[in-house]
Amino acid sequence: MEEPPYRPDWNTEDKSRLKAIIDTAIDGIITIDTHGIMESVNPAAAKIFGYQPEEILGQNIKILMPEPDRSRHDDYIGNYLRTGEAKIIGKGREVLGKKKDGSVFPFLLSISEVRLHDKLIFTGIVHDISELKQAEEALRESENKINSIIKAAVDGIITIDTRGIMEMVNPSAAKLFGYEEHELLGKSVNMLMPEPDRSLHDSYMGRYHETGEKRIIGIGREVTGMRKDGSLFPFYLSISEVYLSGRKVYTGFVHDITEQKMNEERLRRYAAELERSNRELQDFAYVSSHDLQEPLRKIQAFGDRLLGKDYENLSDQGKDYVDRMLNAASRMQNLINDLLSFSRVTSKSKPFVKVKLDNVLSEVLSDLEVAIEKSKAEIIRSPLPEIEAEPTQMRQLFQNLISNAIKFRKENENPIINIYAKSLQRKAHLTATPGDQLTEIYVEDNGIGFDEKYLDKIFNIFQRLEGQKYEGSGVGLAICRKIAIRHGGDITARSQPGVGTRFIVTLAIRQPQES
Image (cartoon, rainbow, N blue to C red):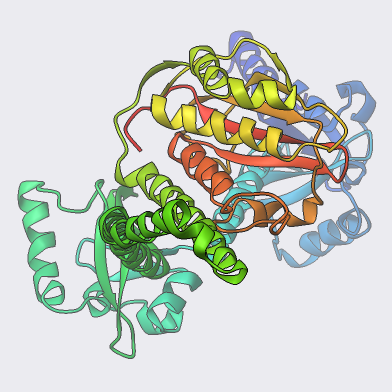
């Protein structure tokens, strides 16, 4: 270490104290002569550059510099000694250093010039700023990410000061209101509001600053905005309050709900239309059960009289007319009854109660006992769960499916009907409430089956795949679907012609409210 200038009043203790301060300093301290040779290096400086002090003492300082500074350093010292023109001496600046392992790092360098015993030396203070630079880079990267997110955000983002002046507007916000960004910056945010909000905005901000009364800040609500062309649109506005460098700013998040409002209006109209359609269906059911039934009964009554009293007096053609008339009346009666059953699934519905499906199935099988015995059907059943449902509609569901399995059997094969259940979690496409536990009821048969390309068709009212070969109106499966949907589920089927059919009915085990 270079000896300090000779001073008569400096004792050994002073020199030791000075050396201890230099050796324990956090920043690096290096002294060089006028040729750039390092005469002293404190431990901090050696560590910063990755050396031991003895490795660099006596070496030219330029070994601690990357190019091009390494090649220029000797010329810089020479030029300073000739002209006195200082680039760093007495000023200090950020420069790059080179460590022993070849890596380059930034540091702040301040150089002072000292004369000792008529000898000129330069003392450099080295402050490593690698971590600071990394932090700055991380901050820049974070700011760039935030700016990228703000600029790419689908929702509009606007920042205003306490006077309502817009300081930042992202592209989505500008586009949403029909402006370019520069047209909004520095302007009052109330230019984006229709009356009376435009006139009330400044007083609202003033009231908030005085009283702290919040109407939107930290709450959010639906408001109306005004575009550059004067058109109005609805959006959801949420505002946050932030303190930046001792001042308050407000950031508004603008979510356009124009499409949502249009969808809500379409749904409202659809619901109104559906309600009207349901009323018409109920009116039709009333008419069917009264006005249509009465003339049909007369047709059947007079037909029965002809059949009983005058049938033998009729010609063969007359007998054929009577038979056809009574058959048509019977089919009409069945059709009306089926229509009434279809309309009553919702129009005459009752509250849900706890229903043991095993008991319901047993009752249905008892009702169908004659048909089962006549067709020599084999019923295979497994335990079914208890659910919340309307008992009558559950009976209707099982009766329709089992009757179908018996009806659509193969000519030379006894029907085998397998009925069982599986539990499962809610599926997104079903109508059950999220979190409901569901059950699937399977009704499998070995009947004639059908081509699955007609799957959607079979559940529509009056749709029949087998024409007049089998009796029926084509309403039964439509009723099953309506019942399943009302009970938080749906119905589908798997089938192949000549192999059989598996109907899958999904039902919610628990219903939080009446459908």
